[in-house]
Amino acid sequence: MYETIGSPVNLGNVTLKNRIVFAPTTLGVPNDAYLERIEKIAAGGCGMIIIGDVPVLSMPFGNNLYTESGFAFYEKLAETAHKYGCKICAQLHQDDTDFGALRQYAPQVKAGKLTQDDLRQMINDLVGPYVTNMPVEKVRGIINAFGDAAVLAKKAGFDVMQVHGDRMCGSFASPLFNQRTDSYGGSLENRARFLVEAVEAVRKALPDMPIDVKLAVRMEQPQYGKAGFTEDELKTVVPMLEKAGADSFHVSLANHASLSDTIPPANHPYFHEEGCFLGFCDTVKQYTNLPVCGVGGLTSPAFVEEQLKTGRIDCAAMSRQLLADPQWPEKVLSGRESEIRRCVRCNKDCLGGMMRHEGTHCIYEKGGK
Image (tube, helix red, strand yellow):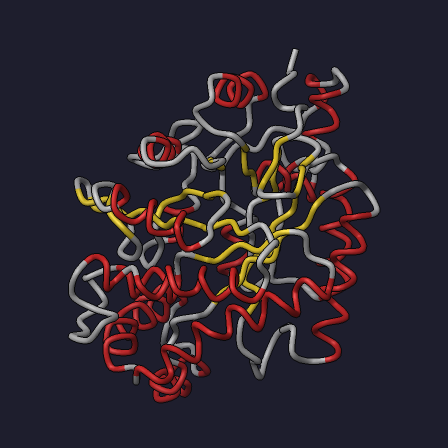
């Protein structure tokens, strides 16, 4: 009944056993709990897990590939996924937060005078000056680090690299943030240069490694998202990225606005329908024959099968649904669809938990319905 969901698909020279992908997700939990969550998702039958926000530079906090403990953590994630025949992808990422400029607000944060929404707005307000004034030597150093991190990620056991087209790549892409007057600003081609050269850096470092690109799409009417490219700009950008070495595309709404837009609840004023971001995939499909992965409130097996069967998308990415029920793929493919715990897109303990600094969870963990 769900033959397309269960069929293999190639990303470059890597074959996924089926079309279901765990979308890159900030979990905000300790390493042991993170590993446990990834193991449940891998055991549940999905074809590939994307590990979100793998830093391309060494960072003083969190996990990164440049420390012994960080490398060991990523190595363990790869081993865990592979144990269940699941491929694993590293989302190579560079933050665009100006931590230096944020230090002045630390006393207000500690005193509780700034809410999380206040802080997020400040972070986004600082992005423009940060990317606009960044010395070109630093820009190129970060771009080269995408290649360096990819080499380490491969050594750790990752099968696919995803270049995160949002965050710093997306902020360089958007004229709402990028006011540079050099070769990394101004024209569309110049604004796309950071992302294109990041893909090129990975391709140069690993000639045979599959490269997926997360494409962040900015809407204008109505306006949603502030980074990334408009749909009209994709006709120029997608061929540039394909030429740079991309093997596939993961398409979603751009960030730097409300998180309830990129992670929309069921009552969102615009993105309330299942498959809410698949219209962006329709646009990308006009300009490439490479595989395209869609995301956005996907929960229904019948709906997902139809999108895959018709070729609208080649892979279906899920985050909240696989947090609600990691066994979604296995249940669908073994004829146990009636047993699925459906994500209701309430955002209470997934986005809500993340915003409360409690970690990304699901109401089902507490027996919710």
